[in-house]
Length: 71
Image (cartoon, rainbow, N blue to C red):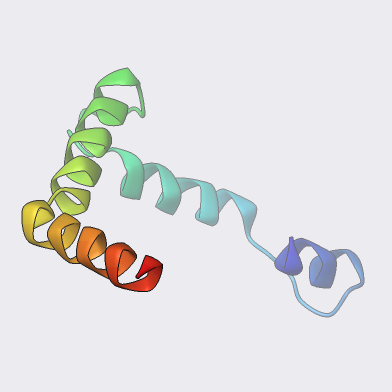
């Protein structure tokens, strides 16, 4: 939104076609030339892998922290 506002007011010139191409390349995880449901599934899998990394240790810490605060 910030870039669009600056573009609208004439401070900068944004090349929207280049931004679109770069974003499509970034989000095309399976590199089939299109962003579709399969890319969404891959992104979800990667996100869940990151979020669940070392989860047992983190949840144990969180439970102990909450128990300590309540006591």
